Length: 59
Image (cartoon, rainbow, N blue to C red):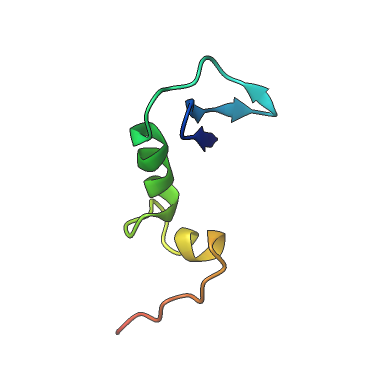
């Protein structure tokens, strides 16, 4: 997935462009928040993708 300010959000699958670009940045931000947001879908996924140290949990 790529976002170009002048063109919008492009979605690729196996290197192939899927459909037309979606104008604006909202889709790009929403999809990235799934993996990189403060409440990522899977615990530790954000830290792994960004190579951050894992947060220690309180007991």
